[in-house]
Image (tube, rainbow, N blue to C red; front, top):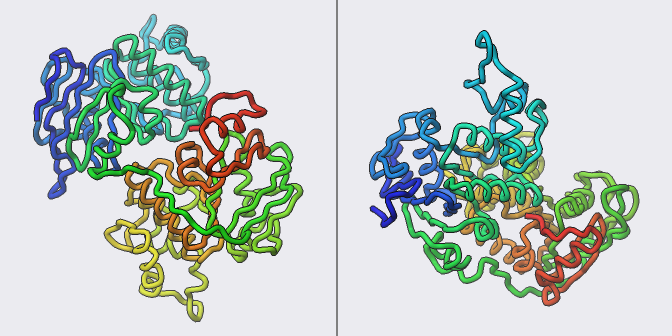
Length: 508
């Protein structure tokens, strides 16, 4: 499918297809990016975005369709050919050589030589410094790459691309592991590159970032091109409808529930230098949102309540019974369940099967005579996998083979299997596509409707406002507001979140 576009487009793909055996990963992928622009590429997991990017990067060769760079037909057989043609891909987690300096990483394989063909480190350091100066960032060219933040590693990859005179830069989910301040720095760099006339492709699930940064957006669905819109002429609702192929009038299907008795009561919780005098309740059937800026102490409060982190004073009780401090097992016995922010590292054993993960907390209770067969385990977890509509080829399949959204469902299923009275869920939809987000939101609403008390920590303000019956705002380790659903607006939450910090940026 050819698209109407001027011949001077920096990058153009039209009707591109790619099959892996009988599986069509890409049916008809199209993308046209102009020089001097930032172009968003969005779609649900499995939409074909990654396959399209890998064709541009030279990882895969297309089976059909057209591929042009600066109006010239190209067909890359390797990543080296793609880089030589002026294309650079900045991934979510760059892979630098940790034992080499920042400069050595930038000039790896093409070191500047001086007299006697010796490596001229002084010139390389100067050139690296100029690259960072041009990007408006401060990174010591001489320091080792070991210990650098993900944000700094991405900047180094961008500097490397600029040193190679890359004309097209593709940023694949670059903000997933960054703080709000780091995201803004990355966006400042991206805008500088755009203003220099380079073409950028930005892949993200975060609509606020797409609308803040990009000039145009292309939507893909089920391996096919769906449409392209100027950012100024589209809305979140239109983008969602194009992505999922159905009307999603409400991303936050919150149903009214009967709020019952207090399940969780936290009084005077304090941890020196982390949070101070924290008191709140969560009732049966209630979703309480915990909002605030990066570093405000939201996750730390949740971890302390569940007994993962220590606290110096205060009490935590479940249905009127005190829960011992620093004792997750006691918290579980009291009826708590905790889904951490980083599901892959803290909530999931990726090499273990789907069944083993779901049975992770309840396994001891399933064993009979100290023995638990795989068949028994599968029978016990199958209803939970079905209830959450976990998409997997088999309960015996490794969790690492699943999409991020299905991994999140597995972690939720694991804790629901404990039949808790309280669910603490940290960043429930981070890193998953919009269709799955809607499914998770619907599930949380249904659970609350069945009487489960839910404490939800989220950095996405629309998610907090859309799902919470009540919003608690944390600023510098203190609760600065307890807002009803009617009182909670972007303005009231932001005012409380910046009450003592002076910052004006909500955590992304």
